[in-house]
Image (cartoon, rainbow, N blue to C red; front, side, top):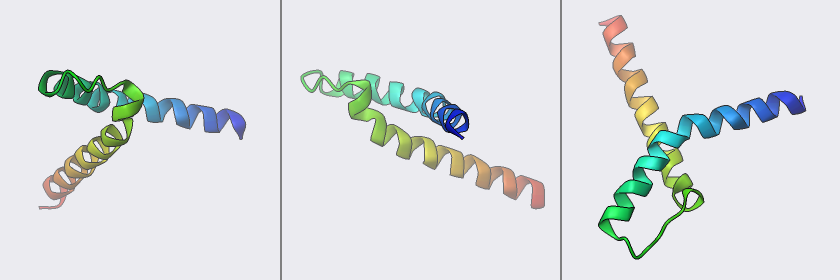
Length: 66
């Protein structure tokens, strides 16, 4: 059970890394004085990853069933 939990945590961080990293780049260019870290943008990266996943799943569902 502990091993499965560690695998899920690892998959979670790998899945949310691209959105979080792009948000860090965006906020670094818009407001460089903020100096957000990975951990500071992770909550917003989780939301963006979830929104992208749900939008792509909905588009895939419409394509398969229409």
